[in-house]
Image 1 (cartoon, protein in one colour):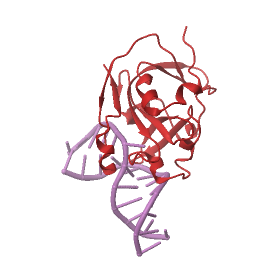
Image 2 (cartoon, helix red, strand yellow):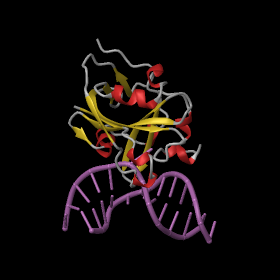
Image 3 (tube, helix red, strand yellow):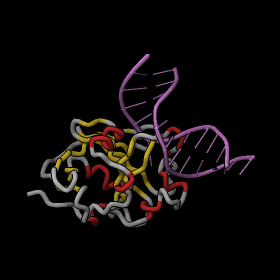
Image 4 (cartoon, helix red, strand yellow):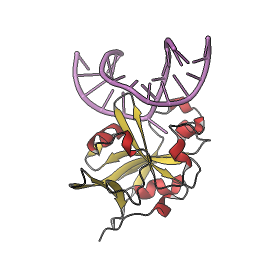
Amino acid sequence: MNTRIKATFFQRDVLEVAPELLGKILVRRYNNQEVQRYRITEVEAYRGNEDLACHASKGRTPRTEIMFHPGGRVYVYLIYGMYWMLNFVTGNTDASAVLIRGLENISGPGRVGKALKLDKSFYGENLEVSNRIWLEDSAEKTSYISTPRVGIDYAGEPWVNKPWRFVAQ
DNA sequence: CGCAAGATTGGC
DNA sequence: CCAATCTTGCGT
């Protein structure tokens, strides 16, 4: 029986939470009816205001506000004017989050947002009580590899080389 | 207030 | 290689 993952799961160091998300089930309920489940296969960790690749490194702004809340919330933002990036806030008000870069049969963060039909109304959504997006445990054990994060050259050293991208194998 | 760049993707 | 498409943060 699948059980919904609680907020406390997210309220730990993002480097601990990120790899544990691999293999977990992302559940999306559309129009309060049809339910779809997706296995998480690829994630990236963004670690607080010191991590120059993390949006929160620019401080607390309307856009990064939710990252300064306790873990268990959704952080979405529009990139290149067309793709909604899905992130889960982690830690406890330390401005860290996990980007969902891939689901089973869906590669790439832009495609994830498109498949899940995300939009700005998901900003701040509470994963513990939401009726349209949440996570469930999976008995399946998942092995993974770590690599540097994608598309963050602007962050420079040492952040650009941190092996904080986790891919299920 | 203008503007350059972006956790990307797909098409030429 | 480059356009799509629009929000955001920063410089003026």
